[in-house]
Image (cartoon, rainbow over all chains, first blue to last red; front, side, top):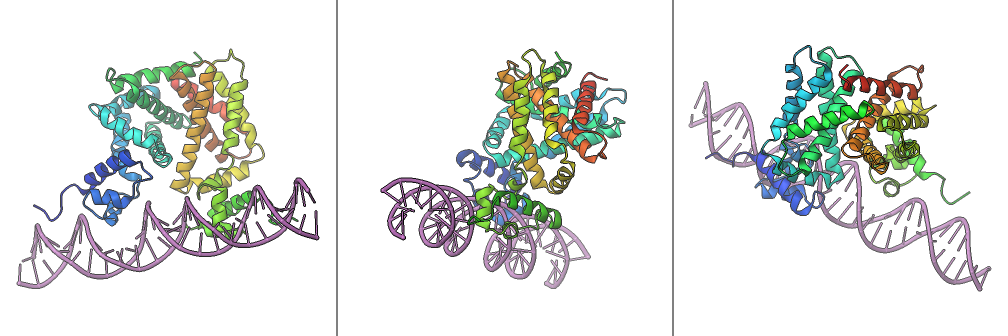
Length: 188
Length: 188
DNA sequence: TACGTGATGACAGTGACTGACATCGAGTGT
DNA sequence: ACACTCGATGTCAGTCACTGTCATCACGTA
C-alpha cells in the first residue's frame, strides 16, 4: 500500500458534489471538502484551481470528443452536418450517466457562480469547435456561428434530456433539437 | 452643494474601468477603485455586488431593449423575424458608443472572471428572450432555441462590429450575421 | 545506504466580501 | 429655531477563498 490513499483528485470531486448537494455550494467550505476526502485545504488547491473547478473535471473530455468528431467528419460534409455528427459523438459520453448528470446539474443551476463556470466551459467548447471548423476551411463568421449554434443545441438538448424520463437517448434528443433549430431559422 | 459628490455609482464605474485598463483586473483592488472615486471599499460594495459587476451596469438596459422589441413585434411575425427586429432595436443602444464598447470589451476578454460574468449576463438575456417568446405563444424548444440563436448572433455580430473600422452600423452587421446563421443552418 | 522526487502538511499572508454600528447633513414637521 | 427621521457613507471586526514558502516523508534508484 502506498503512502497515501489513491485517487485524491476523485475523492475531492466526490466529496464536493456530496457537500454541495447536501448543504449548498456557498455553505460548503473548501476545508470541509478536504476533510471529508481525508486531505487538507492546501491540497485541494493543488488539484483544482478553485472551489468551482472541482465540478468540471470532465469538460476537457467533452471538448475533445466534440473536436475529434469534427476532425473525423468527411471533408465534403457541410458544417451543419459536421455539427450533427459531433452532437451524436458527444452524446456517447453520457450513456448510463443520466442520474449523475441530473445530480450535478441540480447543484450547478442552484448557484450563479457555478452557472458562470458552466457557461465559460461551453464557451471554450464553442471556441474549440469554431477553430476546428476553420481548419476544415469554413470561413468566418460561418465557423463561429456554426459553433455557437452547436453549443446552443447542446445546451437546450441537454436540459431536455435531463428533464425527460428514461425513454429517449441523448443522441436522439440532440437530433430532434437540431432539427428544431433548423426549422426556426428557416422561418417556419 | 450636497453633503456628498453626486453620482457615486458612476464614479466607481469609471474609476474601475480606468484601473482595470491601466493595471489589469486582478492587479486592481477594490480599495483602489474606491479611493479613486473618493469613497471607501465598503461603499463600493453597497453599489455593486462584487468586483466584476461594476463593469455591467448597462446589461439590464440591453435586456429590456431586447424584450421590449420582442413584445412590440406584430403577433403574426415568425420567431426568426421577431429576433431580427430585436437585434435591430438593441443595436440602437450602441450608436456613438463604439469607442467605449471597444475599451470595455478589451478589459473583459483579457480576464476569465470578467468573461464569465459577461456570459451569464448573455445567458440571462437569452432566458428573458425565451420567456417573452413563450408569452407570444412560441412553444418549447423553439422559444429557447430562438433565444439562444439570437444571443449567438449578437455575440458574433458584436465582435465583428468591434473589430470593424467605423464603416458599418451595428444594425447592419447584425442583419448580415443573422443571414449567415440562416445560411449555415440551411446546409449552405 | 545515501540521495532525489513527488505528493502532502503546516503556516502565514492578501484581498474579496459581509454584518453591525456610528456619523452627519438634508429634509420635514412643529 | 428645534427635534426628529432618513439615507448615504464611514469604521471596524470577521470569514473564507486562494497563494507562497518551507518542511516532511515514503518510495524509487544509483
